[in-house]
Length: 225
Ligand code: ADP
Ligand code: MG
Image (cartoon, rainbow, N blue to C red; front, side, top):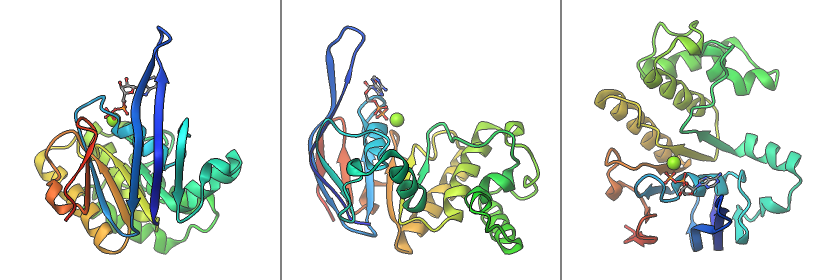
């Protein structure tokens, strides 16, 4: 999906009533299939930006369109459907479904549409194996370590065919080897045509591999390659 922002600003009201402007007049023209890398320390606005792109936050000022659709004009229900169909979101807090096991969490998008098949299970297992979670299929997710949960959240997004994938600190809870597996999975997804946006406060992701890099601390784009 092409993602376009025109003069987008987002601010939060503090408890003291003061406005904290986190995103200020941001412009972006991200072409379908791009890899966009968000850098900047904790609290600089990366998650806020991902929430804007997913339509979970509507900017107070400016306009954001996804393939020409301004999702702020959709009803909440239509916006939810649009998001479910097009956008895969790896949340910093994973948002896994606690009563379900690992395999069910990964296949959840197929389960809720009632189109869940045995071949879905084998595909989900292949993805889990690649992420080092072989043998964990039947475990309830609350039995997993934080790093394992993070990989289940990644697997769930890899399982579905989204046109945009948002990854919020997808390697933050992982050891070096798992982080590199997750990183390569996201880069491969992007190579296959998915628009991928990754937020990371550390240097796991080499920014030179991205098509576009935005530094939220400096509030500017780095040279595009
Ligand atoms: P990052 O993801 O880069 O760590 P965030 O986008 O989460 O940054 O936060 C950016 C700033 O906005 C921080 O100062 C944070 O405290 C503030 N902020 C984030 N979400 C909210 C919210 N729901 N209400 C008020 N302030 C918020
Ligand atoms: Mg964040």
